[in-house]
Image (cartoon, rainbow, N blue to C red; front, side, top):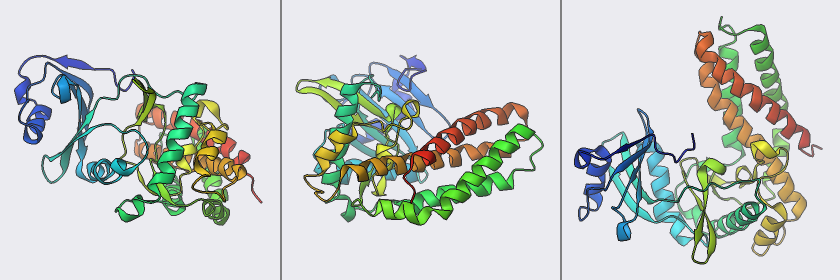
Length: 335
């Protein structure tokens, strides 16, 4: 099911809904929506669409987040995006639910996702990222954001390897599973042995704002009066570092980058004249390594389950990520 498709539509007793109560703290003038669409509802996070409560009767996206994640997004929307040269969603504000959770309220970006298979979208994303990265380099350094440099991804590599080694004795793991996990550990060992070269490649590009999870589910394209406009959502993985991850190849396009690299380079070289296109291609490859390490790390949580039913999903994902990582490592221009 697409990320922005409603799981359920609520039409009664809306005033008592947690999202409406939180919205009322922020803008009490118009509280009750026409309806509430449930986009995602989990124990620690939720996303709702509040119909008719925004500016001019617009729809508002209400996001409930753990405080640590929500605070990063709040910083991006309040202190960074207003100063950049790229279109951004209207940010209505932030309210605190308690010491552990918060709410963010944003303009609805529409239903059309960015497609790396579309030449128009790839060009649009290249310009958007180029302007975002170069304009943010002057802003984000003054704003407290998490580190998204090479050390951040090295931590993911090490944590993933530790999680795998810790769970190799799980009786639910088959011989095929164990062989796959050992292959991933070997890939991590090889990458760590070459990490100094990864760091050297990253040093070729100025540090800037990094979205960190720039992919179709987090990027929408909308037809505005001035033409198609791109909007990035879900900035909880954002930080300050090398912009490699934002250029990483899309899963269906490996090893090709998900944006038009030539157009990205022509956009950023006005501010970064020393950057050549070979460096940008190399950066996209490094971004692919970074993104797959993060994905592998997050799937390793499932290795603790000692049930065939629960471990099959994480193992299927790890099989896919291992193949993608192998292809990305193979595409890297190692010395």
